[in-house]
Length: 119
Image: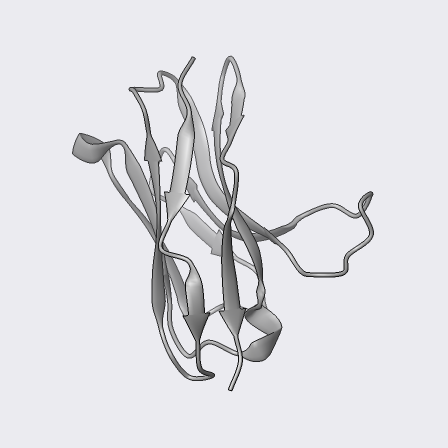
């Protein structure tokens, strides 16, 4: 089964930038959307992850209001990779970021990569 592996997380000061990558171990057919979600520290286990950015197979994007204008989602089909460019980071962006690929058959999730924004 195809697996997703996120990378690029880390610690950064407010105002800094990070680029997250999510690489699939193989090709995923019939993709509907590729997305990044996040879960902030201390959130109740039952609380849903927050959708940060979504990219449809047709190329449309949508973003959470809190990241609009600062984050950009993109993909490289040749590398089976989706990216999240995060600029002007704020302390409230601190979270574990998860990659999701939703296909017609299955919804894939990565294990997450931690982002800490702190001075």
